[in-house]
Length: 636
Ligand SMILES: NC(=O)C1=CN([C@@H]2O[C@H](COP(=O)(O)OP(=O)(O)OC[C@H]3O[C@@H](n4cnc5c(N)ncnc54)[C@H](O)[C@@H]3O)[C@@H](O)[C@H]2O)C=CC1
Ligand SMILES: O=C(O)C(=O)COP(=O)(O)O
Image 1 (cartoon, protein in one colour):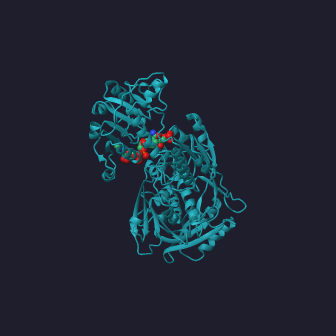
Image 2 (cartoon, rainbow, N blue to C red):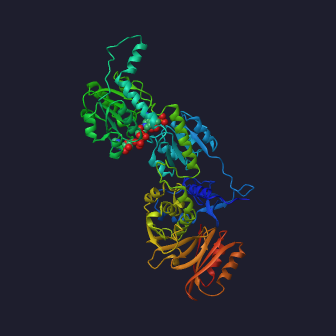
């Protein structure tokens, strides 16, 4: 027997729907597809995995506006097939995790206990693209470039990229977000290793350790050539006062150095606490004897050390870089070394890694180099491997990792509480879009949450993302999830606004009702228009199950499971029987029925939940019932 999932499982299942998997009608437009994936649905107590869904869809222009493709949505062929094992539980194949660079054993063990791990080091970009469509997760260090091409080649399967380290400049985050792929990193485990390497480079550079060692090994004994400089009392400028930078500062203080730092985002009190003055960029570079770089590589920091900046430095300054090669204009550094502005440089990182063998910078006699070893201690690599394995496994389980780089962090307890509302939000979005007449064009959607809770304590990002998913996923060529919902809606020219209305009910429940309104469109079912001319549907969660409670200005009450027929009719006896008979004759099973009316004996809306899709003939017969003014069949 299928057991009732625990709240944790429920939250995880929900997160899968939010993050890692497609839901009931996810469709890959790029090629007709037959996909198997998890679908979050609800029963009275909690969420269950219920369906494997196969969907086929013809290609469409992904840049088309919603109006151009609504007709296609209406004719999409979506078929459901259960994929349960003997216990009625969906069997899920183990995820495939590609590890493209050396990772510590403890992390690999953790990954192996969860999925099938493919350690393929030194893949060419072409080989990576060829493999990636078979992988659910990819773990990299700094050597693998995770480009847009990689996400394209993944064809929607890649759910998470784990960066076993800090810097994510080798991952195209924009592309990851567009493709709905979560990126997580391991930001803490290599901090000390990087800081210690920075100090190692600082001290060995000051005393010419590497050069002296090389010359002795070449049979020389050059004591006067390698006279060094002392550190005590010298000024060190730490550029980027984050995790590594502050640990370098702490250690340099211990060496008796005067430490200043530049970081536009660092709090002054944190610097002051370890006796470091935060100063401007200009002041830092103009006064320092040693400059140590610890900022990330971003568009703002690219080549920030260039001819102009070197010209402003103290003559004879010494430079250490354990951050990223790209923050330095390397040609300018060679010029600064040649002119003596920079007396020495100690570099662990390079614009291109490995740098060309004939690199003037690497070969320069006043430069000490290491091949990106900052994070390479046994301890750091074990720590990083565990940190990233946990983050990737969590992400594959649908959890939103605390180290997510391109998605909001949502605590598990919030996810668990919102679980049925998230399903409701997606279904309302899916219903609302089907009520729009093909070709009308959707630009403005408003989601109204009625809740007894203080608006500040209600996190609606998940709900908004799921309404968005319901609306645009059927016409999108990518899976929509929490990572890419906002991006995808903007790209399609869709403006989704939100309103929170405080109601006088129990704050025990996060949301009383969710209403989805679509304005300035025509509807296939005129009764779905409210007084102000907007398509408007509203739902609520009852006993854990999402229900449709309002269509236009009519109240209804039907569980949002299976499919739905909405009929507008004259309010008169016998209507339920007539329509029920027609459906029964064609073997369409009715799961729920509800009638809502505005004025007695005048007009009513009948909402009928059906397990199967009525064929054209059956739909025609319903339309021919004289008291029925209009009706629409909607897929949930
Ligand atoms: N060589 C190696 O093996 C390693 C290199 N790293 C690199 O070191 C860098 C720092 O790492 P963490 O300290 O862990 O990161 P972090 O995020 O804790 O610190 C980075 C700091 O740089 C600051 N920053 C951003 N833009 C800046 C700017 N324009 N000017 C000055 N400061 C700026 C941020 O406010 C932040 O405080 C990263 O680029 C990372 O990739 C980290 C670990 C190992
Ligand atoms: O964590 C970082 O940012 C690093 O640069 C470490 O890189 P690596 O994992 O050793 O290739």
